[in-house]
Length: 423
Image (cartoon, rainbow, N blue to C red; front, side, top):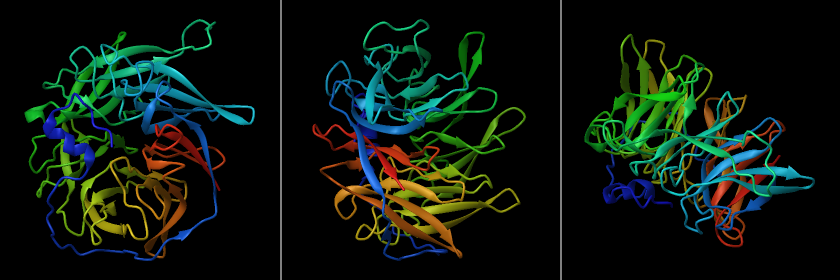
């Protein structure tokens, strides 16, 4: 697991997702399946390998353009060595093979370093993301990448980076790690792991204004029942409400799922669920919201089998949400989620993700499907440690229904790869 070297020592356990101690508090469970998952026939291909100079430890959110090129970030690697401060890359078709191209190598200085959350496209066609370190104050940046304005005549054509904001580690936050998200007006939203009130993290908005970007901190976590360390970014529903998770905090200090809603003059945080560390799990990952406003997510530990859970929060119609567990992970049969485990949805409402472990030790790619009031898990592919190890990104679909993702390790140099799973 990656650990940012410049973050406070007290926060390093956050990224390992394995702090000691748990609260074994019982909770009534709804609609749980305990079946051994079946394995569906698929074709798995490793598209490209990382080798250090072209990146090391890929992860975070992937992006895809209209012609099927894949974009992402690596936490380490680049021109400054195998453990340099990271890269932004592109994977594209060239005839019958896939080609990995470096778009930008971070220096770890004013341009930022160690991108953790991945990349997204803006409406202008540029790529946007965050780095967890570097910048003017060493607390990370929000950046924009776009192709050079004139045709590049060299073999290696890097994109131009613009730093939109430098975090100070103070009231504005520090160490942004999650992916960013845009609203319809072009405002950008994200979270920081630290900074803010008591260095418990913030949710922020960046708004374009006459060639620059202005920051507005929407919420500063207090580190108590409201949550602590929102490391995975936020997602937005159709009404513009924001949802996220905190790794710690809440009633039992093992994480929360929260909602931020905009009022006339300020944003209000509501804790939708505070994890108890028992059968409901602990240490949640980034949630996803379906078109009906249902919120889905996973926890990385505890639960009935102590391997984590999958949960759903359904709107009640009166402004609240009802919480239920829809799946209990069991490492003997299915891979539990880890820190990078985040779901995506298809048009039929099925959930897809990848986790560590599995029958072959390298992790699994899996689908959760609703069926007659319960949820069934299907293992789409069981990874081996030799081919790919430790899935590390939010998955994406192409127009043909193929799935793409990354592994943190694996490949000839054990620096990770980008893979494709074909139905």
